[in-house]
Image (cartoon, rainbow, N blue to C red):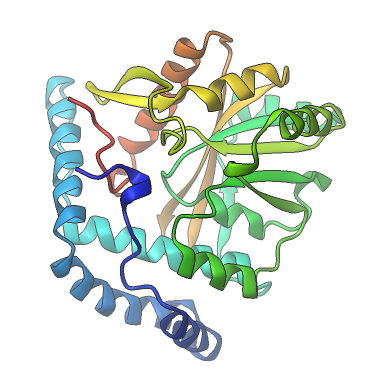
Length: 298
């Protein structure tokens, strides 16, 4: 089964993306989702690999729920893939349109309050994000806390959608860096940025395509998995507060931001805290899992 960096885009293309953008601008996000839902139905029929990993995830989730005396989640692979397609629509409208109707709320708990205190005091923070929900849509929040955000992404993945975003994006206070550019100099720059009160965000749920053997072995939903050791080491060496973060669709165009402070500085224990955070969210929002590759390792 392919790893994440071997999975290619489905249903994307320059003319197709521009046509969908025209529909969105003319008729709004809900009309676009109707069109995308129809397209997604045909894509789902032709993407056997995505259906297979969706079923694998659901089976592992249901087994964990049964073993822990929880009600099993009921959803089809088609509904799971459609949720991902709708998240791409929300991502596009949030990043590219200042008039987006996407609404954000926060899970106002003790971890969120601690993050607020850190930001208010002028300190920076390192965010460990994931492909759960729609973290990129947070770029729609203009000048959030008057902080500059450094977000890292793999620029070789999803080229059609990435080129579309580059043409239309209206980022405010967000700087996109390629994960391929991470070296000693970049690490030093990020350290300085954090010390001056800026923010850094990196995904911690996918191994590095250049260092696929440098991993942390752990468990998620009771099943074996591996995480990129480099991301956790990078966060630790930056010597700043570290938070896991997720932006979850709660229905329609409504999103809720969750954070959890990572307290350990041992990378294995950091990974456990991070996965426990993701697991707790997934048990509430099971179709928000968008890792359509062999995440679980036997």
